[in-house]
Length: 299
Image (cartoon, rainbow, N blue to C red):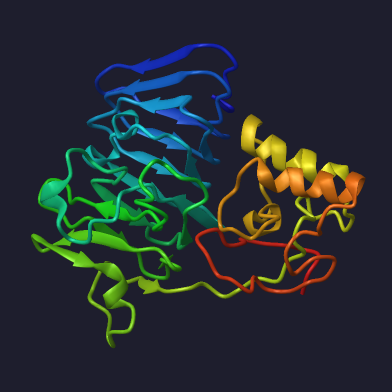
């Protein structure tokens, strides 16, 4: 398939030993269920607005060439704790985290907690960088605390593998993985020298900050209604996102309807301006779980 963006109720089923290959994105705007006993390969992004996207795969692996973003609040819709998820894109990729942060006390969890059986970052000869983000509340903020990533381990293998030359950047978010049969807090490994062998790649904290112009959501060099529309398209129609921080007009670390409203209110009702950096290039003064993969108009 070139891409999968159904606007009506859709179920895609692949029988045992069958694989699904999608060259573009998975970005449904209606309830879509992917039921596969084989592997799923996606060349672009996997974007689940609302609770439209459900995966029922429990055996095959998922390979993603872009980013993985979801707004689901039901962990049972994304049972990735039973599969291996590999990121093998050619540029910076991002991964939404949605789990309730219970530290390493996973015994109290009743489900996979939006985790993965095994996360593989990069493949031999094809290194990549994956940045963790927490753009939406998946129902597990726990009174305002950021959500977390859990990597459960799979078939006796550790929950995390980072290929040589690849990087997993945790940012300000917590990540936990079953390594050698023991739950480890990956954030505590960043400062170790050398870092534990996780496959040849490295863990990083906050990735290098990229300068951007807040509320120039479409990065065209102008502040106008097109920026509000761009943000609305991302929120409700699975539209693209050049820089998540640029869409976050109020700098609250979340992408919500309030962000394009601030743009429109400032343009047409003399409302307060978006948060800094606004109408200029700069870095985010309050690092959060969003980040910015690129913004070509700023140095």
